[in-house]
Amino acid sequence: MNALRYFAACLLLVVASCDLSPSDGGLAMIENPAVGLALRELPRGTLRSLGLPYGLAVVKVEAAAAHAGLRMGDVIYGVNQSRISSAVDFARRLAEQPPGAPLSLLVRRGALDLYLPVSPGRAGRRPTDTLLRT
Image 1 (cartoon, one colour):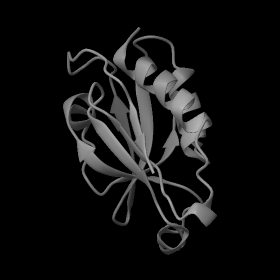
Image 2 (tube, rainbow, N blue to C red):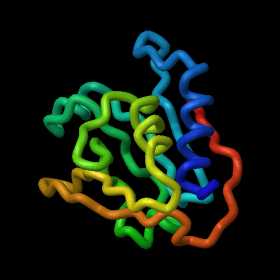
Image 3 (cartoon, one colour):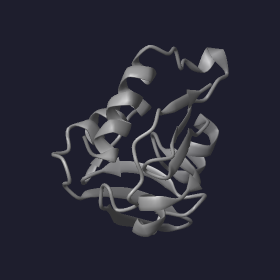
Image 4 (spheres, rainbow, N blue to C red):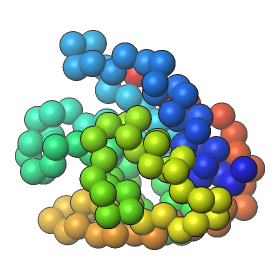
């Protein structure tokens, strides 16, 4: 299984079993060293200021994610020309990708909206466990 599909499958399992409701005050932290990406859910106030209904902030970039041009501070709010609505939705969209298929992430960087292509397995690292912290 390629690193991106492994990341998505693990994330989907972990996120689906967690309660991420705003009343908990906890925002999910998603990390996967194989893909080289760590993401954090954004608070509603931050999303409003960005004009987005939902997004995941990039807090760490290495490996394939760095090769694709993602940067810390970017906000991922879409996958393959469709907006995401939750961390589970993000994981589901990644899991639906055929093995090795390029993935296009819709990213807000400052005042710019960009599509950045991610090539799974580009980093050459082995898949490891995905961590979800709240």
